[in-house]
Amino acid sequence: MKNFILDDSDNGGGSTESCMYMFNAVTPDKYDEFCYESAMTGNATYEKLDYDMDQDSQFEGDSEDFDYDFNYAVMCSQGSFSSGNLFPCLCKEAGIPIIGETSAGGTCNLVFFKMDSGNQFSASAFRTFNFQKGGNVEAGATPDYDITKKNDDGTTDYSDFRNFELLDQIVNDHYQKQQ
Image 1: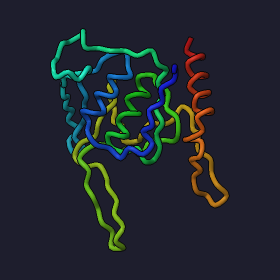
Image 2: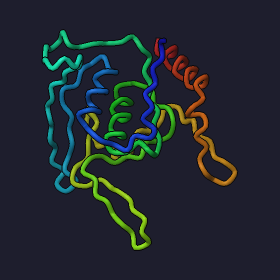
Image 3: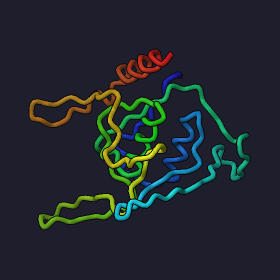
């Protein structure tokens, strides 16, 4: 196996720490901090974390790093929100190809709103996560390879999200161009 595609297309969010662990697992450079800014003041905050990459409950430093020789890619969609949005944004910044459609944007500290009609929606509040090099990720990760199609009725056709032959070809072609 050479290609490894992480399907983040229906990840509505969760743990930033888990997101950063996965990011460190797929990138050759290790990141021990993430940053966010206040949505109200614009003040930036950096959180520094130490990751137990081999999950043995001990922090051994560099001897803990592991790198697999895979061609990584990330699939995302409008279902990728909060930490599920942060992950493809960071991966794109690190040069890992994004497949699917633009992620939903949004980051941590969700607020849930209920409409008079009974419908609910969520939105980010208070803080927004940033790319490693600065700037927030609220707009989402734009795919390098948009594989969605439109149906006659205007809905989105996601069938190629499970077209493994196509996905494999996209990743192969992407990494061949890198050589």
